Amino acid sequence: MVQFISVEQLITGFLEERHSLGYSYKTEEGVLRRFLKDFTMSPDGKIEFTKEYVLEHTNPKLNQSVNTRIRDICAVNSFLDFVTRKGYVAYKIPRKSLPKEQRNFKAYIFTDDEISRIIEAADSIPYAKQCPDRHYQLPAMFRILFNCGLRISELLNLRFCDVNMEQNIFTILDTKFHKDRLVPFSEAVADSLKIYYKNVKTVSEDSWLFCRPNSTERYSMSGFHFHFQMLLRMAGIPYGGRGKGPRPHDIRHTFAVHCLNNWVLSDVDIMAALPVLSRYMGHTGIKGTQKYLQLTAQMYPNVIDSIEHEFGCLIPDMEVKHEEL
Image 1 (cartoon, rainbow, N blue to C red):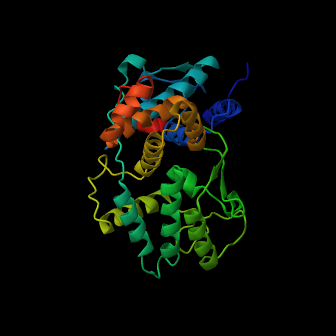
Image 2: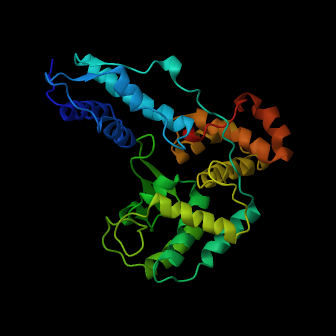
């Protein structure tokens, strides 16, 4: 058995094991680094994670959601499992003491009129010296999201080399579930990208497609949230505040629901179409995609009879779990 002489070696060994199994573990690594920041080895050089240390360093943080706390504790428990397997003493938080996962998420589905107003708001953004590319970025970014259903992280991770303007295809790499996929885009998206390319300087093919103001760094998630809320105000769409939405991820929900609604109204075989949508959106399986049938029925009551008559067995009787979509 490999013996670790420091906690740094221990966490390095754990991360190497997780990476070898195909896990990205970027967020979880940050959680573990924070968990270990106050850890000191005992005077005799032994590595031991006591009950007191573990509980103190997994206490709920201010304004931390239940689901985030569950994610953090699961990451810590996985690490402590590894510690125990390597022959050291570690206290694990019992599963029964974990808070109950919240599954009451309700998606906000934008109407066609609201989508038009958001796009119009993005198109009307004026030039600003402190954000010189913003009035070119936002029209392209929001057309991509509403037309392609990408996750926000997938949009912000795009590089110039990931965009094939000849075939109108995005290459989406290392997604949430560690899969790559190709996503075609419409002429409306292509036209907005052509305008963007014409007016924004490209450093290299490996550069981020959307950068922060006056920087070569990737456009930040916080910056995106700020501009999303700004566009909601400009479009006259009420924002309920943190945890109430609309959320940026609701654009992805909207894409899927509108797609399914159009299919139902066009008499498309949903049984055949769902796997296509599942692959397009980067889901690990059809289960996550099925939940959009419920959202479609809720958003468009006029098609609920058609959906339930033909595909009632596919509609899950549950609330949508945000993280799975």
